[in-house]
Length: 232
Image 1 (tube, helix red, strand yellow):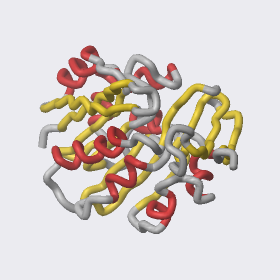
Image 2 (cartoon, helix red, strand yellow):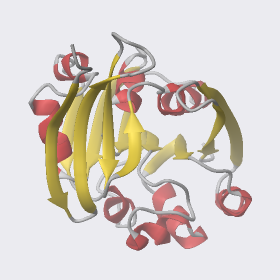
Image 3 (cartoon, helix red, strand yellow):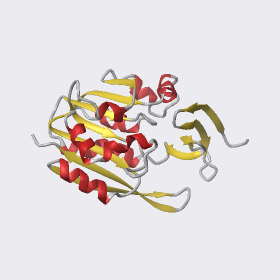
C-alpha cells in the first residue's frame, strides 16, 4: 500500500499559495502528520510542536494571576492556543487569524488540535490582522499576548508587520496589556536587536531557546521565545 499523502486544502491568499496537507512519514510508517506550506516552502508541522506550546507556557509562568485573558496572534495548527487553554488559570482565549482558509481548517476539523479547540467554550477565533490591531488604540486590555506569526523579527511574512518590532510599535502594543501583563513572541532565530528593543520598552525581558532534534533531517534545531513583562 502506498504511503498516505492527502492535500486537504490549497488556496491563493494575500501571503501566497497556502497548502494544508496530511501525509505518512516515509521513515516512520504509520505516523501521520499535518503540514502547512506557503508558496511550496515549509511553514509548520504537527510533528514537532515543542516551541509553539512552550510559548504559552513561558508567558503563563511569568504571569502569576488567575482569571487570565489571552490574545493569540496566529492560529496555525492550533498548538499555542491549545497550550494556553491547558491552564485552569485562563478564562478566555481569543485567536486573531489573518487568513480565512486557516479558520476554515478549524471549522472543518482538519487541525490536529481541532476537536479540543472546538469543544472549549473559552476559545474565540476571529479573522483579522493582529499586528494592525495591536498597533491601534486598544478597546480593551489583555493579561497575556502571544505572537506566533512571522518567521523572525527580521523575517516577517508581510513587510507591513515590521512596525510591530520597533520601540514605538512595542510601546503601543504595551497599551494592550493590563498592568503586570506579558507579551511573548515566537521566532525561528535569535534576534539580539529585538531583545534590546524589548528591554527599552518593558520592565522585564527574558529569552528562552527551545532546542529540539529534527530526526527527519538529522539536524539540531533551535527556536527563540521572547517574553516581556509590563510593570504592574
